[in-house]
Image 1: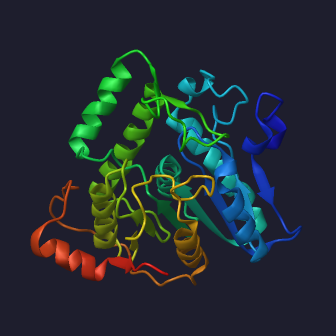
Image 2: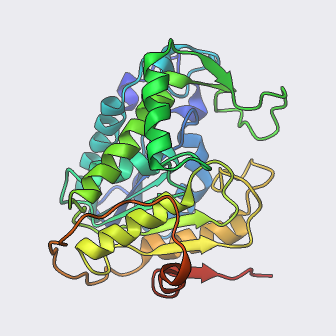
Length: 313
């Protein structure tokens, strides 16, 4: 991957392979978010490496350019993102006995989509996954995706007020609406396949922020419920209750990131022994991936699916 990255890619944004020089028991692929780069994972990756894992951090196409206002990212497709992640998994297969993929936001969506196509990923960890924008249900997100695909591409600032406090130096200050549309389409594909009975073969833990400002947590929760209906114990959901309203919960340069809470929890999820999951089963009747879980279903769901992580002080 690094051989294809020339001077146009900034040094912190280049793909990384942290290897001990031999095959390890665990190889981890870390997928970054929308308009960021591998630097987002640098500190956490170093911790995994020090604990014995080999770690692969690919740079998604169109990301990480020295010119942070590049228009190259607008031409990136969902297929290109998945192909990039697949190449990283191929590298990880040779570097570890067990392969785990973890992705943040868009990276989580790509990770789950890839897991639907492969049976060599032991665990796919979705961190604040982009399965739909907050305040929009599944259908509304699909309509928005179609609208953004039909309209000419536009670049919109992450912070319309002009501030840049939460935009990392290795990321872009704006995003293309066309790639956002592709991301939402990919999320809809994952949900449609779940509704049709498709579930990845490996484990599917999700890590959510209770105060998530950008993505729809209920769509993530509904997906986990569906996966568990298809294959018992396929998915678990951990909700961090003590985080501020902040989407990038991984980057230590983000002023609102509480990595003192997030990193230990994420390490536990990644390094946990492989759990036994039930056989895949067919579920009769239609299953609607609802926008919210309410009433008694919500109580049962929280009791049996969510692990509520209490504040640590």
